Image 1 (cartoon, protein in one colour):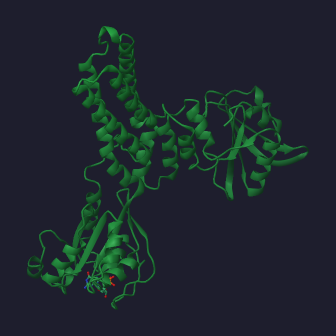
Image 2 (cartoon, rainbow, N blue to C red; image 1 turned 30 degrees about the vertical axis):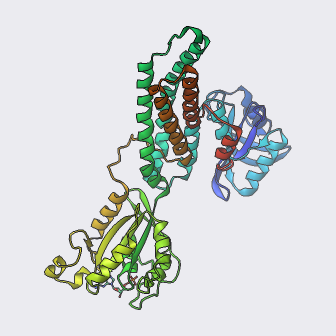
Image 3 (cartoon, rainbow, N blue to C red; image 1 turned 180 degrees about the vertical axis):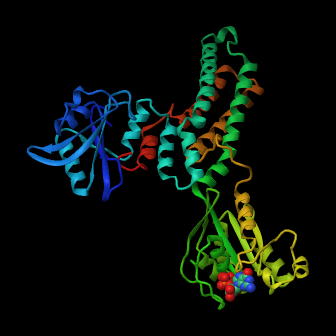
Amino acid sequence: MNKEETIVALATPNGVGAIGVIRLSGPDAISIAGSVFKGKDLTKQESHTIHFGQIIDGDIVLDEVLVSLFIAPRSYTRENVVEISCHGSGYIIESIIKLLIKKGATGAKPGEFTLRAFLNGQLDLSQAEAVADLIASNSKASQQVAIQQLRGGFSSQLQQLRDQLVQFASLVELELDFSEEDVEFANRAQLKQLIININQVVSRLIESFELGNVIKQGVNTVIAGRPNAGKSTLLNALLNEERAIVSHIPGTTRDTIEEILNINGINFRLIDTAGIREATDAIEKMGVERTMEKISQSALLIYVFDAVEITIEQLNNDLKRLQKPGITMLVVANKADLLTKEQLLSLPHSQSAIIISAKLKRHIDELKRKIYSSAVKHQLSGDETLVTNIRHLEALQKTEAALARLLNGMETQVTSDFLAMDIKQALHYLGEITGAVTTDDLLDNIFSKFCIGK
Ligand code: GDP
C-alpha cells in the first residue's frame, strides 16, 4: 500500500439506488475531486462542509452531486477524504469513478479505507475488524457486540495491561545488563500480580467466546424425531408461518430447508430438516449414522416425540442414541392436545420434557424460552465485552499459555534472560490482538475479507 496514492471506490452497494456515494481518500483527494467539480473551489473550503455542484468531464455534465469534505486528520482514515453523493445509476457511478482515476486517483483494494484508518492510528486492529462485523451484523445482538468492540471494547483494556507488562520487560532487560551483580530491578511480587491480573482478563475473554460466537454466527440447530412426530409442524409453529410442507404421510418433507429462527436477537439456524427427516426415518432401521452426522454439526438438538404413539422403550432408545457430549438436547413431547392431564403426567420423562402441541401452537413460547436459554446462559448486559473473532480467540489462548509458562518460570525462579523471553512471548500474542504486533500476511488476511469501498 502506498500512502501517497489517493484511492477511490464506491462506498454504497453496487446496483441501482437513489444515491451512490463515491469515496476518495489520500493526500490529493480534494484537488482531484475539485478538478472535476463545477461549483465552489473545493481546495478553499473548510473541513466537514457539504457543497452542491456538477461533476463535469470537459464540457459534458455527468451528474449533479453533493460533495462532503473531511480534511486530514479529521476523517475516517485520518487522510483527506471526499465523499461524492451522486445519483445511483450504475452508468453515472462508473463514469465518475473512471474520471477520478483519469485525474490521478487509484482504485481502492478491499478494505483499504479501513486499513488506512488502522495504519494511521484511527482504529486499532480489533476495532477495524469490528467495522467488518458491524457491516455484516444481521441481528440486534450481533450489532451490539460489534459496536461495543468498535468503541474500544476489550482491546483498550488489553493495551493498558500490555503497556504495564512492557515496563516490566524493560526492567528485566535492564537486569541482563547487570547480570554480574545479581540485582533485581523488576519487583517479582508486583510482576506476578500483574501476570495474574492479565490472566484473569484473558480467561474471562476466552470464556466469553462461547456466547460471542453464538451471537455472531448463530446456533446450528437440528429438529429430530421419528416420522410423524410433528417435526415439520413444529418448525412451522416456531417460524410462525407455513413454510415446510406438512403431511400425514411419513417422509414428505423432501426439499432442503435452512430456516433462521430469531429469538431475542439470537439466530438459531435450523439446518436441513429434510435431511434429518430422511435420517430419522432410519433411526428405526438402526442406520443412525446420518442423523448423528447432522447432529454432530449442530450445537442444539430439539428431539420431538409423539406423546400418543411412543413407547417408553422407543423413547429411551432414541434418547440414548441421540445424546452426544457438547450438544444440548431439548426433549419435546408433542400432540399434548390429544391427551388428558393425567395421561400427560404419566408420560415418560414428563418432568424434563417440554410438553407442547405444535398443531395448536400451545407452549411454543415456553419452548422458545428454553431454546434461547440453552444458548445464552446468562442475561446479556449492554456493555459486556465478548470475543467473537476466532483470530482473537487464538491469540488469547496463546497468550494464556505464554502467561502460564511465565508464571511457572517465576515459581521455579528462572534466570532473568529466560524470564525476559517468556515476557516477550506474552507481549507478542497480546499485541497480535490489538495490532501492536502485525505482519503483512495478517493484515492481508483481515482486510481482504472486507468489500471494496470499506
Ligand atoms: P413429521 O413427520 O415429524 O415432520 O410430522 P408432521 O409435522 O408432518 O406431522 C405429522 C402429522 O401429525 C400431521 O398430520 C400433523 O398435522 C400432525 N400433528 C403435528 N403436530 C400435532 C399436534 O400437536 N397435535 C395433533 N393433534 N396433531 C399434530
